[in-house]
Length: 199
Length: 237
Image (tube, rainbow over all chains, first blue to last red):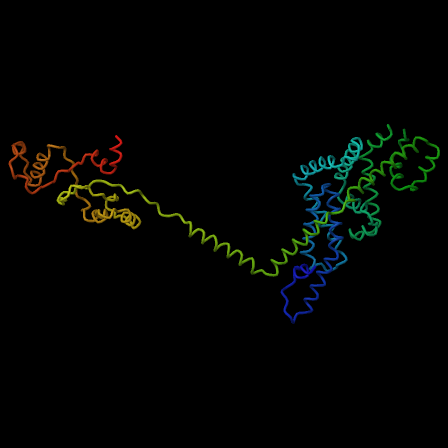
């Protein structure tokens, strides 16, 4: 915390006479620190929903937080921090998703995850990972706006109003986007409904 | 099999129940559509669970530590901007020092030793004097000079001194044994400008070439020197 106060971008080495500036810088740093833990979780989850790989998601979250930190002193409305961080993390995650390395890491991680979960039966693992794979691919095909709204709405504790605040959109728009996203996913996964019918 | 006209309505109903009155009345009479609606609801539950699972995990505690560490590092660089320049300067100075300490030395050529037989400068001794080879018309450079002096045996004449005393363009003539007088006679004839074949063929008279005193080269037998250097070796034989 003290380190953050001393190192916030835009802060200068303060003289004794400039105490008000020092106090302001300390306040801003304290604000950022207060939002850091919550913001880290949000950025990580968003990145994870896109990348579906913990290591990649943590890298993206770290980069998003650093960018947010660098621009925090320039942010006029502190209440918009989370939405701003959301956009940074989302954009970075999408950029990373386009990278060629992501697929390799994800495949390795999937293998490791399967090996690390001996308590589940092989059939369960196969069914779950198969469904998650299909769901992930279907989500990748969703338009970005729908996908973002769906993911944010799925994060535990986030109401439609909070998502609307994060995305700076009316609640009705968010509801509509989530609904549309679910509908498109269901249409893409209709083969699964038929599969369920056979059982 | 659900009724085809209600397929999309069933998906909508599974997502947001109670939105379609016509569907509700149809469902009251159609068992297939009710079954289909149940499947669609199950699918939606799985989608909800799947999407929720994607974002259920939280970041590891290491993430916050990493972020704080990186922020502190960036902040330090920002708080002390001169530190970057100082570090860069120190790095450059260290590189320069290393370069100076291990800079490539001038190439040292192995001195070539040849026998000198300068006409007009007859040495009283028959010992061959080592001379530093230098390109014609060029004096040995400082490095070669220093090397020649440092490698010079204490009792020998400085090779460089000898090289300086020798005129640069003096011709060297190697004469086969027994033909020295004939060659000298030819040289005298050429210098006088009158070449007479009969005079070249006449027998040698005593004192004719008194001015050119060339001491014969004394060749010491190698066996004798070896025995001097390593007397024990000879005893073994």
